[in-house]
Image 1 (cartoon, rainbow, N blue to C red):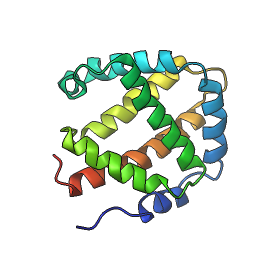
Image 2 (cartoon, rainbow, N blue to C red):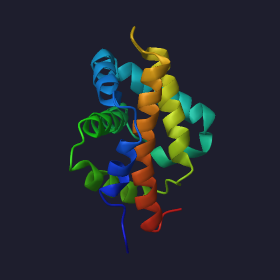
Image 3 (cartoon, rainbow, N blue to C red):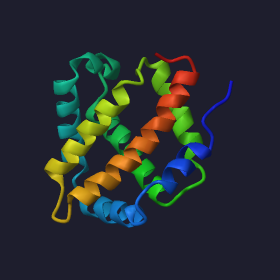
Length: 155
């Protein structure tokens, strides 16, 4: 069974604005220290907008949700730095998500909730350009995960 390989993110990176990496780095630094607020608001917003996904998260503690968000932020940073290990991690996470029942249509919903959360909790310097860089990065990341889940037999 073919799986999305390095061309998944590599191809997407070529289409990004040349200064996305800089915007992502700067905004990640500005978000440092706001992780708890991001986690609380993100999941409140995601579940409010998409109550059907709440059951997929079961009884995950706030610590487990913090780890999920931390993995997302690390993936954005790794994407900005063009880390070679990222594709393999995203493929594994996509397959794991599919096994938990995450459907491909949930990824764009999560991205919008994440972007809206970052809009709300962001420090000065957050701008439409920064949001667009995050949207491109999260879109590329979740696309690799979604395709891996679909190919793995997910919904």
